[in-house]
Image 1 (cartoon, helix red, strand yellow):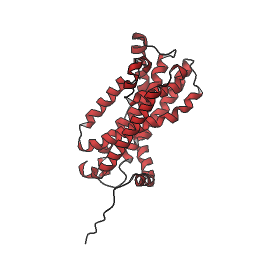
Image 2 (tube, rainbow, N blue to C red):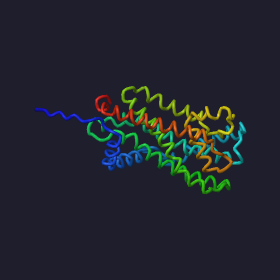
Image 3 (cartoon, one colour):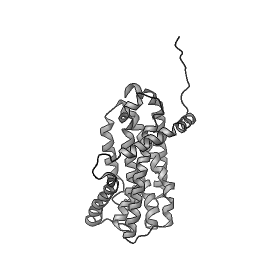
Length: 272
């Protein structure tokens, strides 16, 4: 006679314990994603350097030289690159994680493992790009005679805001994309739109005070502003209410995305 085992719903503590048991698989998949990141490209890992550099040059010309927007006595290239650092980290995680479950459908339909490992590995790929870009930023600052301060040690404290936000979006969209493949077209549009309305090519200080809080409803505004404060110093002060808004929205999106993913993951193997 076939034995039917009924288990209770997976709780959050069980989820973390299970994730720890499968840590070797997490590292294996993360390493695979890093290796295939620039596979079959002519320039390889150089793309992780060229992409932000080319964006920096374009934004510096458009916003710094042509529009002549203020940079707070900071070289405009450094102003732009200090924002590209958290932006590239965020966009890489969102882009990679959102489509990851469908991209790994063959693996999901064959063996059991915590499905959440798949979108989470995008964080490792983004971290590799982040460290390369951080090194480029330091070189750029020295080139302009703009030297790092002790504030930069605070960057690891602010990085989790970007991680919670990007992974939350990634969990949510990757689960939705299993049933509704429309999201593979929505994700690039979403990332591109956020890019242009975020203060990457300009300082958020140009936003009038009466609109700052509303503008900060875009959670990347608080993330970019706090990175600029850590990198550029007092010339770019933290807008406290904007940072608080960014933290609250990022945590809310992470919790929503995580719960939705865990609630729907048991259906992935049947649908994907």
